[in-house]
Length: 333
Picture 1: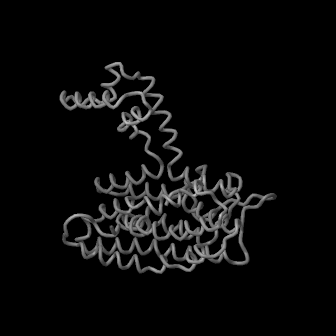
Picture 2: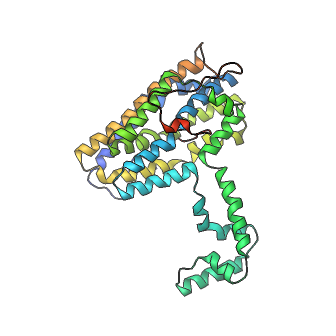
Picture 3: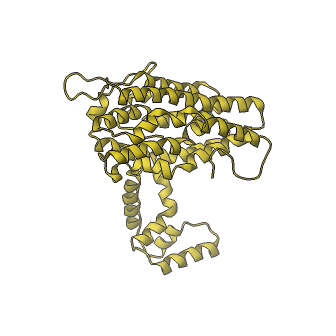
């Protein structure tokens, strides 16, 4: 299923998504020579570190860009869809409560028969009481057991957020907090971040929405498939340590789909269509320039890599703000 077209029956404005799809899928960023070289050439550990460091300087801010679009959107439905994306990016521990009864079953704390009976009683009563509360009232599980299960699985869930998965990848390449603090952004990485800041914070919210959707999330599987191939072929990183890339290639279609659905009501308006096309293509143009820089940086003769000793070189950008002060490794799209 193509993530650049809305689901459901045809509506006025759907022709826009055909035009948008063509413009995005034919954009040269998706077939950049950097991606082709990364996928097919023999990569050294140093080259992987060089790429990973620059990607870190971009991805650690991704949640900030998404949050900026959420905050500027006047459309409640669009905000809801974007928040779903945000939850998956940074974790959503509160929703564990919705499926904790299944975890109780998995842990052997309740039987299938007990759970089925509690669910049936919940439906018959019509009170809307949570099924877990019913199990507690019946003395089948204790509040302490439920709390323990939720805490244990919340911690496991946090280990599977995108930032956590990316930290695992960085760590496998020997890039810890110290090394990351010494990475210097290439010019094109600074420009990429500046473009996203402008699109998501200063431009019309529909431009930011399209930049994050068709300009980013919708093309991630295509772009990252080449990255994943190169990482796999290098042999320097175990499969469990590059799952960040695997997830984005094989399991990330929903993010782009959410944004396309949020854009759909506005496709009937000419000015809105122009803004959305502009936002998507601006993001792709910035990524194309970034790939230009990455190709020079990763495959060229002069690579700036984390220093092992001596002075620390912190990544800098023009117009830095609070997002540069946040600790830890990022891992957005």
